[in-house]
Image (cartoon, rainbow, N blue to C red; front, side, top):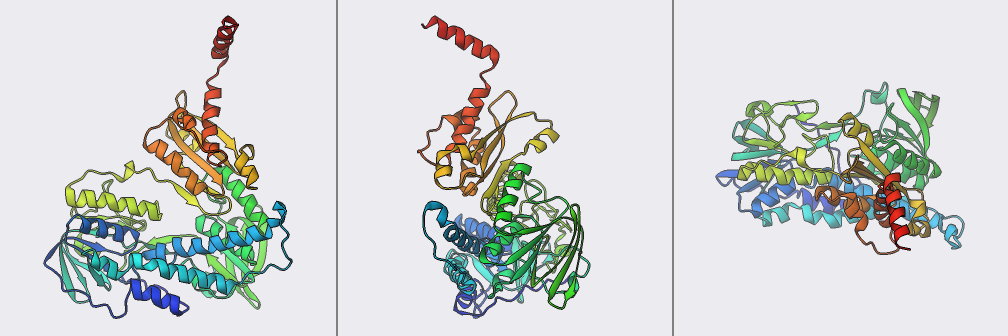
Length: 507
């Protein structure tokens, strides 16, 4: 297997030069291997960096190997650049919508797309020292830049040096992968790995994929002024999320100008004299549109090529490296964490998987990835966040639930903010206040979901959540109000009869 070459960092301006100088210094000299390492970490994205820094901080002798850019997807082509663009798009939306607040907005508000992208590159460069080779060397980690591969059950080779290890961790992440779309190989297209190199706004942008990346970028570019066409899969928009919540997000995206080309049964693309032609046969009908640029945001492949996994006795398949619940591979002294082995491909999931790996690999821990309670958030406007089980998931697991939904249009702060379209929905085990799962649709749902995640992790029931005093007015009051809904539901006719009788005695 040959490793897939990553795309170049473009444009080569001062900000990207600063980024590369930090996360893959061109003049970096790899250290001389210092005997047998307690831990060798293959991959310098979030999972690898957290593993290396914690292990070194605990006194382990650690080597970290990265072939491309330290910081991985999150810093370079994921969380950091995408959220910079999303924030700029929210600013555009706020300016254009300021008339609803009694503010006169001058006509002709435009977006300096080159300026938006320059700001993103500047902020990314400013954040990059945290993931830099120099910083990790200062933490006591031996940083090796180059393509690493296993040459045996206890050795990794990189740049002509052989690193011997007692334990190793595979944290090489995943990359964008295009689905088998007829004609795709004949047209130029973007992925999340190349999107952030744009310097000109596409007049017409096609987006394939209605997962988090597709939805976030479709709405963002529509707000910037692109005419955006989004092709969903047959599963619809955000298929892993609550259907009511996804419908709220879809309505907001349509208000921002995103045109949905239906739930695609079949899609093919071809070159057109004026751009890229998308021919869609969808559940709702047929579509035939031409776009200037195409973003494919539908699929990822684990980075296992070129790692020499056979030499180490490590098994893998199309989903990535095979691990057990303790993140141990088929080689008992080699572990894996992050996107290369997980279906939860989030930065925060990689972070906490890395903490488990350090515990299990170096201290004979028994931590299990199945015990992690992992929330997620899609950063559209409104945001959609979730933790735990959906009602359908609970039913499939044989768990009966009661569901309580607090609409934001009944929360004062949401009305004052002009953001009434969301809700907080919690599921509790039927007959109890034990939280099973929760979904939040709100402007900052990613922040609000933390309170419910903490309640679930701490085994705090909905009565306790409802008894927590929140400052007034805040949108988080919607969470407390779900506790009120739970308490009212407990007022059965029998209980109400007892209360009425008690009150009559008090007259």
